[in-house]
Amino acid sequence: MGRSKEFEENEVLEKAMKLFWEQGYEKTSMNDLTEHMGIHRRSLYDTFVDKHTLYLKAMDRFGEQFVCSIINGIRHLQTAREALQFIFNSIIEGEPDAPSGCMMVNSAIELANRDPEIDARSRAAFERAEDILTDIVTWGQSNGEFTTRYEARELAEQLHNALLGLRVTVRTSLPKEKLKQMAEMSIRMIEK
Image 1 (cartoon, rainbow, N blue to C red):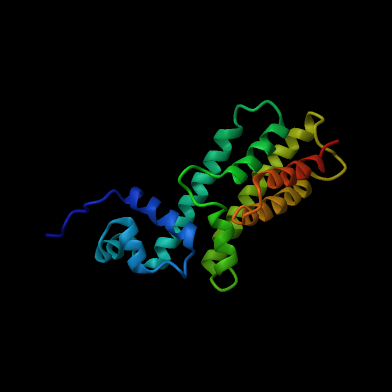
Image 2: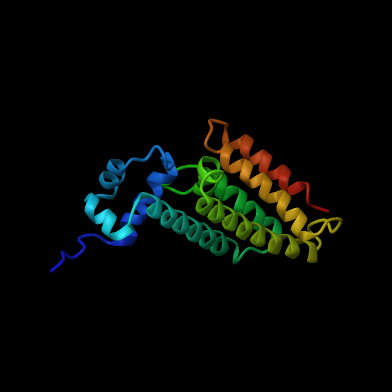
């Protein structure tokens, strides 16, 4: 008879996600994972198969959490501009007890050019972000906040590009005030 799990899978996955997010895939060893997650190596393999599969699950978890936090954060805002400000500020301020930056961006930079599964997940996450931004820009165009000189998708792609740069830059020592100025300029560039 097999041993029962002595841990909550979602809790240890959360710990693995944060460690991968902070250190990256290659820098994170199996010993780092088992120590940080508080489980035995055998339990890690039994539950998550291997390091790569665990990383993919951690990416999925990050993506789900990020989208949920954005959607919940903008749900009750009154203007599209406020929604964009919320998204930019979420990136700049980060979350309590979480690494800075974005796990999807970090994964794309570190692994996408040589790992098709990481590339696919990164691209899917970026497309989802562009979909959300397209909806916000469409909202702003329909109520007269944003320019209609360009299609909503084109403006969303430009905003997403700015967000990608910001997600990398927040990992540096640049002052938050400068990051907020950069975010503000990105929003102002699409206003009427």
